Structures are given as structure tokens and as C-alpha cells.
Length: 468
Ligand code: NAD
Image (tube, rainbow, N blue to C red; front, side, top):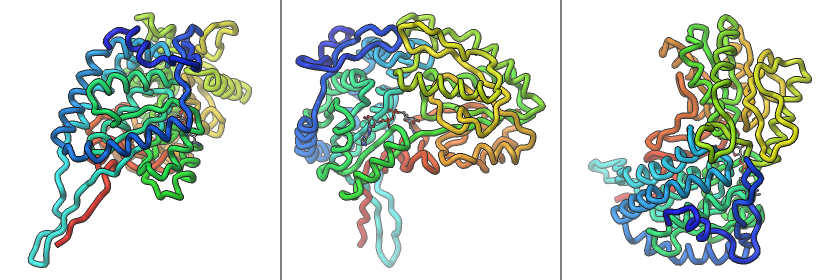
């Protein structure tokens, strides 16, 4: 399945389907199958039946299968990247489609690599206690449309490694990418260990309430996360919730604007701003405010945006019209409130795709909706501050806390500020750089539970103490 047409043939609807269009051109990509709650029931039953023998294979065998799954992704990487680019809109190059497919393979290998030995908690004359992590059973995975392949792997790889079987419910906007990824993985996985049910919200709701599903891994908006908490309550399901963010970046007065500008830019504009842990509001000390704004504007001017399959582009369209409208309305509200649009802000009226230009908004109040709400697109508000206390208070002023960053030439000073920020991860002189070895999760209403690393594996296991 190494060519694009093979991949498409493997995943496109054979009967009635839902047309999926390229958000950059409006062209038809393919019709996605529309699965129903009935299909979900069959998938859960098959996954449940397959789980005991998958668990019985043990860690060594599952590690080997995950490594072979990563090889299969590598072997189909170009075809996967093309489909991802057409369906999601992200360019092939830059930190986009090829990068995402590479990340999917890397995270599969990482999930295979970690050792997870039982922990000896007590071992003395009084006795011994060990902590083991057993398989949970069937894991439901519900995902968003921004990084559909990478996030699917973040959910399925640790789940499989721990001896669970998986039923995935991709976003309605990007089902083909997840179906294609699963088709590639299923070349090496045993039958029924991984299912994808490409349905709507009703399928997600049924999955999260299902009595035969033991855990939900959910990545998406905070509002949907709360709905899942409610619908999973009756079965006391385990949950890992990676929800929305509105990450703050704080530039301290000693930072060098030229030196940090490009990293600041990608911290905010990776995947054209459609990234959970992208920098979504930037606080800059008044002493260097103008220099940082102009250095960022210079970087923005040389980053081409356009159709994903054009090799020269590194920024793409918004994935869907609803998200385009959110970004456009927030920028208009900022303009109406008197903020200064430094670059961007004027999308073309007639265009086939959902392109919103790279936009920097300066001289904006902290309570402006473009700051206070998650824009999830290529429009960065830049807020001026005078004291570090003020910046920290503004960074902590929202009810979400996924990531944050502090930018400074003095790492110790930056670490002191980082310790005061309410966020699951605080990066120093970078933003959004996730690593398969390093646990990742949200504070406050950005969710709970951890992904990645050994901690991530533990979250896909049922802890069991053996005491004697
Ligand atoms: P969304 O919440 O609208 O949808 C996510 C998924 O949930 C979709 O598959 C959808 O069909 C399903 N769903 C919707 N209602 C449901 C319900 N009641 N029960 C079960 N499933 C339901 O999110 P989105 O718009 O696809 O993604 C964007 C959001 O995701 C942003 O807020 C972003 O910050 C967040 N996000 C977070 C992370 C993270 O790691 N924290 C990563 C990526 C995206």
C-alpha cells in the first residue's frame, strides 16, 4: 500500500459515503465511509473478543509488532503524507504532513521501546508489595482534525503496547487520514486489535458510554471533554483528556528579539496555528515590545502559505469553514476594539480554500476575545506588559493551562518564572516541542491524565498491587 491510489482505494467508501474536500482547493479527495452506531457495536464486540489473546502475547511480542507497524508507516510515508495534506490541508513541507507521518512512526517506536517493570514498593521483614500494570481491556480513542495521524498514534500506540485493543472514532473532518493510517497499521497488527469507526458525534457518545469500553482517550475541545466525562460516568470509565489550550508565551526584557523570532513564530504558527499546544497569546515586556513585533513580522513575511501539495509552502489553510469563521471574527473584533493589525487580517474575499493570512495583532488588551478565547488559527495577539508579576497574572488568568513558554537569555530567571505558571508544560526558549519520552498533559480545564513516556504507558494500564 505504498501508493496514494492504493491507499485511497483501501479507505474510500464503497457504497454511499460523505464527500471530503481539500480545504485548500475545494477539490474532492474521496468519499469517506459513514459508519453507524451499529458498526460501532460490532467493532467493540470484535475488539473485546480479540483482547485476551493480544494481552497474552506479552510485552516482548507487542513491542516487536509496534516496531513493525512503524516500519509499515515508513514504507507508506509519502502516500500517507499526500492524503493527510489533501484532507487536512497542511503542506507537505515545514512542520506539517511529512513531519506528522514521521512523528507517527517515531511515537510507535517510542511506545515499543520503554521498559515497564513492576515496581517494588515495599520489601522488608514485614512483607513485599509490588505495583503491576495490567491491560485495561478495550480502549476507545476519540480524536480531533488538526493532527489526525499523530494524535491517533499518541492514543493507540501506548494502548496497544499495554495489551489493550482499540476502537477509534476520528473527527468527521479528517476520517480518511485515520482510516488510512489504520489500514497501514493493520497490515501488521493481528485481526481486530485496531478498529476505526468513521462516524459522527452519536458514535463518539455511544463509545464513551459503552459498558464494554474500559477507557476513553480523548483529544479535542474542552466542551466535548466535559460531555465525555458526563457520558462515561455511569460506567466509571478511565479517562485521559487532552483538551483545549490557550498557551501564553512570556518574553522577558533580556531576550534577544532577533534570536528568538523564528522559534516564537513556529511556536505560534505550527500547523497554521491549529495546534493544541501552540502559543496563542504572547506577552512581551514593554522595553523590547516594538523590536519583537517587528522581528516577528519579518519572519511572517517570508513564510509562504498556500496549497499543501505545492512543495514551497509551509503554511496552509484552516481545515474547515467553521474554524475559518472563528479566526476571522476574532480578528475583526480585535480590529474593532482598536488593536493594531501589524500583518495579515485581510483574507481574500473570493477563494476556493479556507486561507486566512498570517496575522499579528499588536497593542491589544488582555481581555480582548482574541486573547481570552482559543483562536486555533494563524492570528497571534501580542500584549504589552511592564512587570513580570503582571505577565504571570495574565498568563494564569484563564481557566485552561496546557502549555506555556518563557523566553529569556537567562535560563535561571526563566525557570523562576516558569515555576509560577499554571500549565502542564512550560518550555524555555521554545514552545510546543513535544517529545515521546516526556510526559505531556494539561493543567486546569486543559484536561487530566498524561500521554508519552513511561507515565503515558501507565495511564493505559490498570494498576494492580500484589502484596504478600
Ligand atoms: P471537538 O471536541 O469538536 O471534536 C473532537 C472529537 O470529539 C471529534 O471526533 C468529535 O466527533 C467527537 N465528539 C463531539 N462530540 C462528542 C460527544 N458528545 N461525545 C463523544 N465524542 C464527541 O474538537 P476539534 O474541533 O476536533 O479539535 C479542536 C480542539 O481540540 C481544540 O480545542 C484544541 O485545543 C483541542 N486539541 C487538544 C489537544 C491536546 O493534546 N490537548 C490536541 C489537539 C487538539
